[in-house]
Image (cartoon, rainbow, N blue to C red; front, side):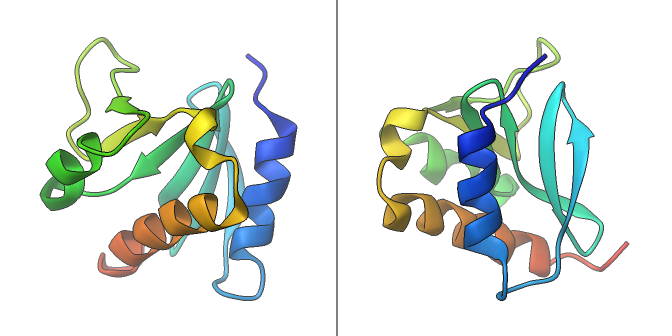
Length: 109
């Protein structure tokens, strides 16, 4: 399954110089890992945002989001974000900051 390479490049730009990260093929797309945890990723042309259980309901209230149900069941720590809501660099950076902030609250793997 292909993923949006343009979005991958933009995500890399949001992370470079701010936090150490690696990339890993995951969910048929690409995941950006921080401290061994997935922070954000791409499946097809959508952003997969790891917001945590406490941030999940609030994230779903934002435009262009929906439950991540990759396995047929809702993952109550992650949401999909439609690419139409990521047009500006500031919008994308906001999602990246939210996800990295959550992941940095977890113990490193």
